[in-house]
Image 1: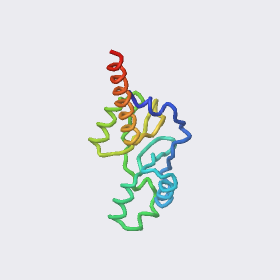
Image 2: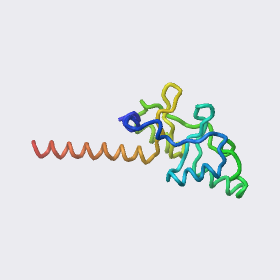
Image 3: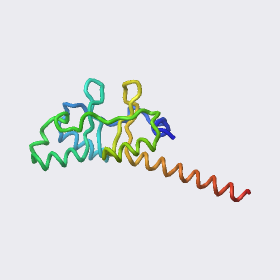
Image 4: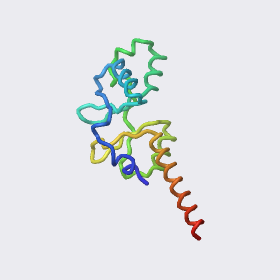
Length: 143
């Protein structure tokens, strides 16, 4: 299965993101309100980075509370590591493991078509394994 199978029933309007000029404290509030761990960061409609809980922790450790008044564009992880909707789930999981990241913007034709987490990928893979196990049980029972 590929990433398209995960994002196909999601609306782009549901993607929660922020602009590079958003203040860090406002982005943190958005993460908390939406109960999410990361935001794609855009500039002029393009994805230019990712702002995550880790970015907050690292900056607080380095700078203290002064980082909260900075712009997200100054503290985000950039450039954003992305995948296309045709990327296989196992490839995306491998990429996330190698790069030690938990979120990926899904880009198609230069535009963001989705935003996935490692949890989305693990759930999809587990569903696939369960489906295979059910098919094997059914085959054994009818053989």
